[in-house]
Length: 506
Image 1: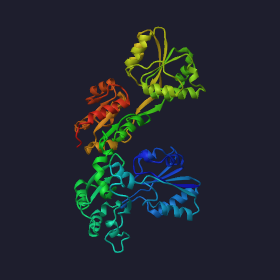
Image 2: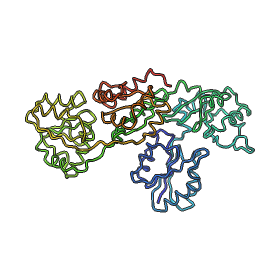
Image 3: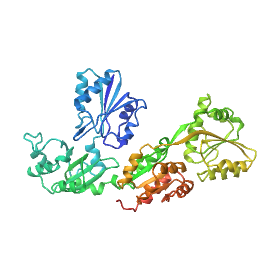
Image 4: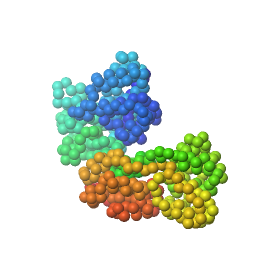
């Protein structure tokens, strides 16, 4: 029985504390808010109970009193509960109230601080809240109360006359009144002021103006909650120190079509470049229903001269069969190993083996060419791979005199997870790029989203990881706008960045 009040941070999943991540990954129950991202929820145990209690203006999934009762009830079931709250639980997060209720109910708890959006949002927009030349203090204020009501808790005269940077949270609805009250109390209408919307996330937008003009600018530019209001001379530094919104893919929406097991590298690299990533795993990697054939081969590896891996998934499922048979990498003995590219070679290395061959061209043709140069006549080769795959490699090896056992280690099946998000971005004109990491992702993408629908949105660009994928795209009616010279995920991401470097955002 235990409850952790965890600060989820301001939105960027990388800003969750190490302690918060550990507790979140071990909890039995996760009770989360509106601002909790998919990336953070993915850290929870697969069998953890996820309960949404989000609250946004005018729309409460659950009232605060009921949230308190829920935390207590789940804890008294003997469970470890992670209460995931945006920002920091104790900074306008009502975490203090939840903690009091837990204490009164005899439930042990712990508060794990989080990085507050009041600090991180402005920082990501290039606004340091304190600066030796401009401000030596900062005041964080709730903007949620009605500033016109009698007996406001805010001392507007003190706020207006201080040299402190003012940060208002949850104040967009009251922005005109906030600005008016500060100016009535003596603050100069020309004081620099800014808004930061969805700070630290790939949805971030920011606006610098003056206190007098900020309300009209907010309406004109369409700023709504969740936005932070910053008032003070430190806003003058915004243009100079803005770093997040200058990332090469900032403001771009990019779709990753790889299977979820493989998509993490692509998604992380694209997000690092500032993109909003929609994971649309058009294929799902599933095990074979029967492994008798592969187990026979894995149990008698000494028969083979070579084992050839053409994907990370091939390595992953091969390794599983080794373990299932009570074996490990030592079973490969004197068998030589070929890997199609560096990512696959890394997976082989993680198994405890260094690949004997990694071709300079990371496609099946490259593997075939490199192996043929070594002489394959009379060699026996094991090729554990996807159930459906191109015949280029085994055909070339057989023609060179090798005996090749092609055995299915896993299967690619269609998936439509997050299709609605892709269609929404497409129809709203927010979709900038779709990346394809294999021919199967192209085919499955078009099976889910027809070519005729794509043609209605000519602004979308398409990226291919290599020539084989690009050729599949052309054969199915999609022109590959972007293709990397090196057939790896990092190279494809770099090519996407280069393609959008000089392209104006809509």
